[in-house]
Amino acid sequence: MNKDNNSRFFIENSVWTMASVLIFIFLAASCKRTTEEKPVKILDEHTLNKRVDGTTVDPLTKQVYVPIYSDIYNQTRDSRTLLTATLSIRNTSLKDSLFITTIDYYNTGGDLVRSYLEQAIYLRPMESIDYVIEQQDTSGGSGANFIIDWYSKRPVNPLFQAVMVGGLGAQAFSFTTEGIDVNAN
Image (cartoon, rainbow, N blue to C red; front, top):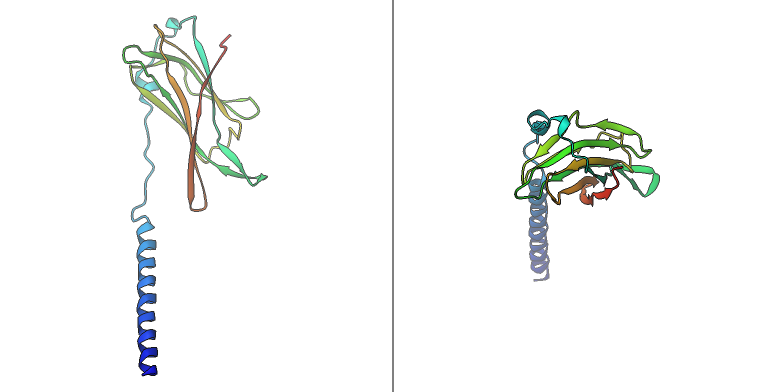
C-alpha cells in the first residue's frame, strides 16, 4: 500500500510539474513577437505643404523652451540609456491657426544641432505636428532642448510637449516634459 501511495504521489507530482512547464512554455511563447515591425517613414507634410510667406511674421512672436532627454544616466555617470524623444506641438484652438517660425534643436552644451524649418509653417485649428529624435541620435545628450518661436492672430494656448521612451532589459518606460514660455527678445 505504501508503494502504491508513493507511485500515485510521484505520478501526480509529475503531472503537476509537466503542466507547470507547459504553461510556462505557452506564456513565454505568447510574449514573443510573431511578426517583425518595420519602421514607418513619416512624411512631414507640414514643411512640404503648410509654408507661410516669411513676410507675415508677427512682431509679438512668443518663444517656448522644451527640454528633451535623448539619453539619461543609468546607475553611474559613465552608463547611459539612449532614448527616443518626440516633440509634439499641438494647436489647441478650435478657430485659429498657429504659426511656427522656428523649431531649433540644441545639445547639452547649448550648441545648435539642427534647425527644422527653413521658413514658417502653420497648424490649422486642432492640428498637431511631431518631430522625432531617434534613439541612435546621440547629438543632443542628456540636456538637449528645443526652442520654438510661434505666433497667432488671436490669443491661443498651444501645447508643447516632449515624450521620451526607452528601455532597460525587458522593462520599457516613458515620461513627458512640458514646454515653458521664455522671453523671445
